[in-house]
Image 1: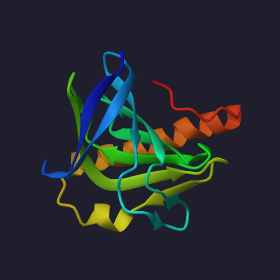
Image 2: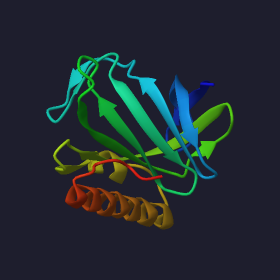
Image 3: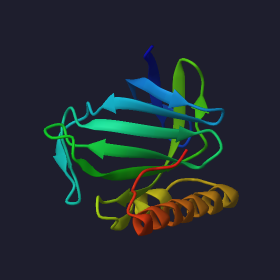
Length: 159
């Protein structure tokens, strides 16, 4: 039985920025995988074209400082890449997921190329040293994770 869940994207202070619904695909003690459709404005960021209706397979973790969005094209379901948000660990309940965005992002293209995004926005946030350190560690964890997957030619997040 499919279960609908609400995802709340919060800013670093905990204020809601966006929310949407998704369908739970599976879950574990410290993670959740869901499917959602992109409902934001279409845009071309140079490395990805966001299309209304793109399919997202989203991975949230209550013990990791990031989440992973596997993005599939709305027209042919081809993988566009993985958008990883550096965040505080997610709060996962039966009804919702809440994640506090730290602005710093990592993009991994379908062939494994990696980009660090929004470093200037991250630098502008009022964060303590421990949080900044943890955010940079999350970027390294993402980089290591996808480097291993690229070498194995099997680009899928592990739970």
